[in-house]
Structures are given as C-alpha cells and as structure tokens.
Length: 372
Ligand SMILES: Cc1cc2nc3c(=O)[nH]c(=O)nc-3n(C[C@H](O)[C@H](O)[C@H](O)COP(=O)(O)OP(=O)(O)OC[C@H]3O[C@@H](n4cnc5c(N)ncnc54)[C@H](O)[C@@H]3O)c2cc1C
Image 1 (cartoon, helix red, strand yellow):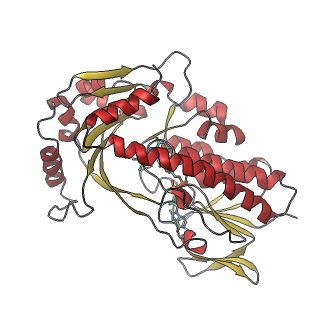
Image 2 (cartoon, rainbow, N blue to C red):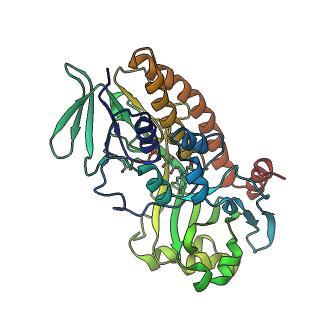
Image 3 (cartoon, protein in one colour):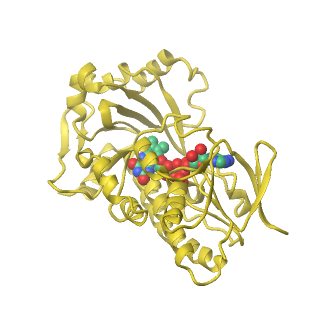
C-alpha cells in the first residue's frame, strides 16, 4: 500500500526527498509557501561535498547533470590580511571534484525537474495523530491529512512545533549580505582579487568574504560579532546609512577590500540563528523533520549538504523499507541526529574561530581543512 506522504518546503532538502521518491515512482505532495520558483532571489553559491550533497544527487540520479553545471574552479580560496597582503592562495588541483560550487538557482532547477510542486501552499500548523492521520493546516484556511509529514521548511519551521518546543536562538554573529554584478567588466580589479572562487579577510571579531557565483555575479558577506540590536540607531532600508556603518566597522582595511562594500547597491541583514547543538526530540508517529528545520547551524558549508543527504536517505528507506513506515522514520531520525550533531559541533566551533577576537584562529582553521 502506498502511503500519503507530504513534504513541507521545497528547499534543497525537501526537493531532494521528493526527487528520490519520484525516481522510484513513489507519489509525494510537495507543499511550498512561495508562489513560484523564482519568487525570491535564490541566494548565493553552495558547495556540494563529495560524501554529502553529491551523494544525495547521485541517489536522485542527477550527479552527471550536477557535474555539467557546477564550478569545480570555485573551490579556489584566497585569504588576505586586513592591509591586503595575500596570506594564503589555494588553487584547485586538476580533477579535484571534492567540493564544486553551484548557484542555488541552478541546483533548485536541477532538483525541480519533473516534480509537480504545490506552490503558494504556506503551512501554518501540523497536528499529529488525528483520527484520519496527520492534519496539515494551510494559511488559506484549507486542511489536508497525510500518513507522513516531513518538515523541510527551514529555520522557522511550522512543522517543528509538532515534535519539539525548541526554537532557534541568535548565534552572536550577524552577516550583512550584498552583491556585485558583471564584476569582470564593471570591476575588473575586484574580479582579479576574488579570482575563480572566494576571498576572505579576517579581522578582530569581523570578516569580509566574497564568493564568485556564475555569470560574473559576486556575493559579499560582512560578518561581525554584535548584539542582536546592533542596528537600533540605523535604518536598515537606507543603503547609504548601512554602507557608512559597515565602512566604519571595517575602518582601516585595504582600499580594494573596502571596494566590495563601496560598489554594493543593496544590503540584506542576516543575523545568524541556530538550534541547540544535537537537537533531538521524542519520536512522534507520522511527523519528522530534516535539514535546517531539524538542525539549523552556522552557515559553514554543511547545511544544504546535510538537508539533501537526509532527504535522499529518508526517501530511499521509504521505497526500500520492508518494515512499517514508522520504523523507517525512527531509524532515519537516529541516523540524522548522530551525523547532524557532529556537524553542528564542527560548524559552531568553526564560527567561533572564524569571527573571533584572534584573527590568527581563522587562518589556523583554514590551514587545518584546506588540502596542502
Ligand atoms: C550565507 C549562507 C551561506 C550558506 N552556504 C552554504 C554552503 O555553501 N553549503 C551548504 O551546504 N549550506 C550552506 N548554507 C546553509 C543552507 O543554505 C541551508 O542549510 C539549506 O538551505 C537548508 O535547506 P533546507 O531545505 O533544510 O531549508 P531551506 O533552504 O530553508 O528551505 C525551506 C523551504 O521551505 C519553505 N517554507 C518555509 N516555511 C514554509 C511553510 N510554512 N509552508 C510551506 N513552505 C515553507 C521555504 O520557502 C523554502 O523553500 C548557507 C547559508 C547561508 C545563510
């Protein structure tokens, strides 16, 4: 008998879950709040790890297509001193495909493929163990029941309260994101500074990171330790006011580095929120979580990878599982908690060291993780 399965959220985790089920001919309902795939800008580039995101793409039958789209050269990484001196310059080794980069929009379209998504279906509440199964309530007042509801609805999940009372807390670090377009023609000096991959500059409790996306698009992240209300006297909608405030924060840094902020045309405020490391819950029949909904952690290159692998693994176990659905979900949760707990520790320590009172810590961290 086929179960009535829904996934809330069409991000990397939810789409991978749905795509692997679809590959095995298993029906799934994908409920997405956004009205269309391109309703919001998709965000920056993602690196897909060989043993995580790439494994998930393989389970979805999409690895070859991913390799055709991805940018292995995007693995290049340069670290500068605040005065502009180059401290490290890691180039990609020939044939290195351990962590190629892909634009989020490209990854989304790849995963969407033939999937039939229910757009504009914001979920407001998930109620387990009703007479007819798990009840899902929608923002438009409608409701529907399923045998299994998978919450892949990100940091502020509306599915999470059905299994856990925990909510994300501020990590003490804020990102302000901006971007530059057509960098190769409009800002060739910056294009050379950034190279094929990323450039990062670490100072005391602050950092500036720029990452190349495809098509000459650059995402820039100003990162700093600050109380959540650091902008109390600043109008975040006032581009020039935000620019001045950031330039003051990075005062004294090399002019080409500050050009990343001077040439920006808009700023997006992103205080970092996290769930407690090793967030688990008492199993609730018919509802589970994956990805950021389950284990929101600092954005150090693992979140989308984990969400995708979890989606792929849960889908695979559903299609191959001989036991009952609940047993499959319990086993999935145990596996997810162990792996995500490990990554939450790594990324929490990583954030402490990258945006740290001692910038030498950031360099030491990269020396540990970059291939020599
Ligand atoms: C600056 C930055 C850089 C990052 N870089 C990387 C990286 O290089 N590599 C990496 O692996 N990770 C990276 N991450 C982390 C990564 O973005 C997340 O971990 C990942 O997107 C989580 O995927 P997800 O599918 O769990 O959730 P999300 O991507 O958050 O997707 C959730 C989906 O659910 C939908 N939704 C939300 N609420 C509802 C609702 N109530 N009803 C219906 N739908 C809903 C949303 O619209 C969205 O489509 C980065 C994060 C940031 C902020």
